[in-house]
Image (cartoon, rainbow, N blue to C red):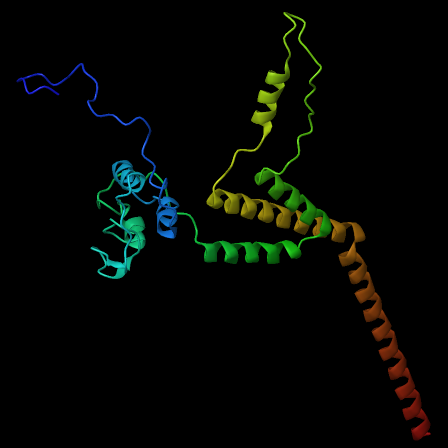
Length: 252
């Protein structure tokens, strides 16, 4: 920019410009750099996310050696660098963890590895209680969520279009790519799995009640109960008759 008063734009290019973009892990392959590059920037607003992403990209990010103190609850619960508010306070007050302002949060932090394992173990335990049919339906749905569903349509390389002799392989490839499941986050994955599991459990309960209705267990049990009562009444009458006969004999 020129130093001339009122001139806020310049026409020339940047004087010193890099030929290639900067890479923070080009010569540094340490575990620290790999850890910083794999960090998840979450629970912050758009501006703070850009600031932290710039620090990571240009190797200016510094990790914490020990937890920081939260400015709201005054507890040492902050484990992310450049944050001033802990995660619990930020969620309760709906503010950014870095600037502390009430801004729109761009991304939320996903569950930890321990929470993922606990959720998966709980889901597996509930799936084992399902019937074989419902269990297979659940596993098919989960494979579809993970993107492991095989393509039913096979692309033909010999087929060509009638106009101009152009092959339609590209169009078929685009359609196949659209049919493939898009990657989803872990939160969405667990939420969909929970919804599907509850749906299957509800269907299984309905099937059990339908089977009971078809067998007419309640009606048969009532008839059996009435038969038992009638049998007991007859036995009581016979006992009474035998007792009366005994009394007559004794009197005589």
